Length: 75
Length: 259
Image (cartoon, rainbow over all chains, first blue to last red):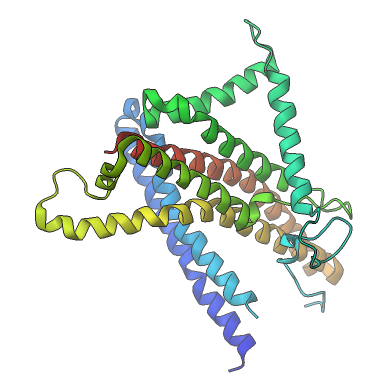
């Protein structure tokens, strides 16, 4: 296998992490909505916590994307 | 598949002096990054200056500025407490600078040849420098207020003694990773979004070049999708600015109140 095709395959595999982060972000927002609909009065004060959880989950997906880009364009 | 030009989504992030195509060895150059930083600064300045009227009944512009400052004031006082007002200037600066450069960088001026907007925050040097400033504020405030007791940050209250030896290194590592994760987040979000937009834009053009029902169909579909991704990009830009401000406030809270 030459380097170029190995790079493309590796970048594709690295991009799986983005989908995993999608699952994480979905869990964060879904669970927040579940809690918020049960107790709407308390939901407003928790948006900060929501976005922190979102940011933590999102960061890993973005890192996977960055790794894919580095693999794809490293020379 | 048409033998179109190879898609090169990295070209848009290239820093080069105005009117030239590559960086030469001279250390001081007026680059596109510097130009767009100045533009961002000018936009922020005009917006804030237009709103600082101190009228009792605010007009529309003043109301917009007051909404923005009130929002940041809310973040810093809610997460830091009554002392939060003191740290608001940096939180406000970071939020407004990241938000404005994210949004100005997403302007669709790329069609005009020499006026491609440059997203300042798509370079890790910029966001990394901002996160280092945040981290320096945390360290400075922590050691100034608490002295060496600031190291107690690594040992949460009520930890049993054997666990302390395990928890302290973990807390230390998570503390030291903060500046990286803080700076990496807005940078990669902008980087990824702009690559996505560039790739979709290339698909539109290549579809049009290929022609035929298939080419035009693909072109139309990706155009619609690119518009939605562009809207999402604005949302992501706002969220990332908000997250940077919120996390900065939370980290400063750790240093001020020490658990």
